[in-house]
Length: 269
Image 1 (cartoon, rainbow, N blue to C red):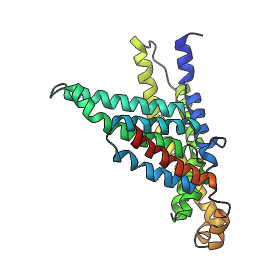
Image 2: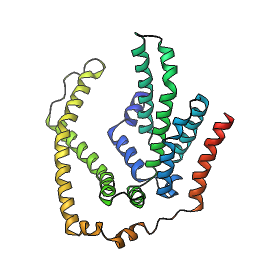
Image 3: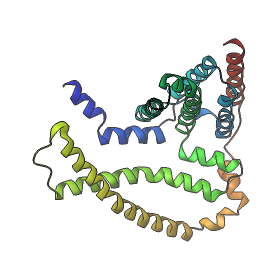
Image 4: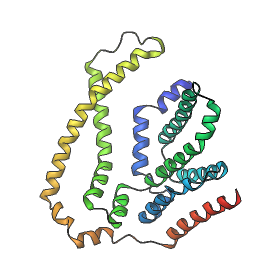
């Protein structure tokens, strides 16, 4: 197998779909998954602001290394990491392209690099936290913080619909491919083939949304028949759902330890 064949196999739809679903559902063995969701959400809220307190590149790079280590422990999808890296690189490249006509592109990149690093730290923190929590855990954490149950249910339902969306979209694209004619010649760099796949992807989008909307309506009617709206105001139902949550010493140790690491970087770097 050549390197090109290996790259095509690694970037196939099935591989990407499996990687994304594993990130969303199968991170039970990761370190952050063992922590209380309330502590994780509080930690995430704190790290939304911490990068903006520093301007020194050494400290920002240290923060990036720290949150990247947490992302590795959270088993973040390599596809998502690659997509984020491409976004950061393309952003810096766009800075250079825009400023090449108006000034010094190197100086512009150096001036905007701290801002880009801060956004990257926040993005990696988001990947680490939310990929380590299952839909149920995330809904419990938000509900315990006072978020209405209607909103937490939407989050859980959205996660649960991910496999349906992937399967539905993949089946529709395959059905359109069976009923349509592929280009006789792929063209230079296979551009006709990629345009053909792009057209099929666009044609399959609307039927997918329509089918998912019909499933959503059936789900809502079934939940209303089982008394979902009545349970929203029932305190016993809320206590039953949140009864297993408990903040342990390891949760406090992780939160305090993270603050100690940040303070150490600020003082030593």
